[in-house]
Amino acid sequence: MSEQPSNDPFEECELSPDAILGTHTFEDVLFTDETETPVNVLTGETPAHSQASVDEARAFAAGIDSDTPHIALPASVEAQIETASKPYTAAAFFHFKATGSLKRHRAYHAAYNSDTFSVEFEADYESGDLTITVEEEDCQSEFENV
Image (tube, rainbow, N blue to C red):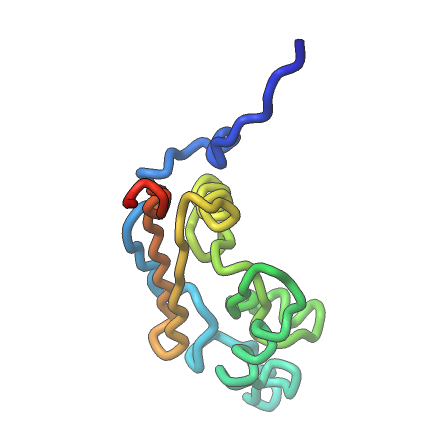
């Protein structure tokens, strides 16, 4: 006899849905105009590759071809220097660099991919704050109300 697959989206998560239900704000995790960029010690100027605007970063993140919405996160100064890259990178809105832990990342991902929960987020690139709201969907059938 074979086992039926579980319908629990949190089956492989270390956190329960209660850990992410409601609204949570993760402060200063997004790329902003204040994101640190490298400075050439000889000229005192930021290299051209590290000059970027929030609008450019937001457009880059929005342009990622994925079913999951992306946000712009700051790239480390070291990464910018080593790879001559922009001062931002894109990641899923529930990425562990934004939410602070891999456990939360997995829980938000499970909720986002589940029909049991509605997940919304707001990326405030002015403050650098990311707000994620998770609510349990009303699973009541429309036929139950007849």
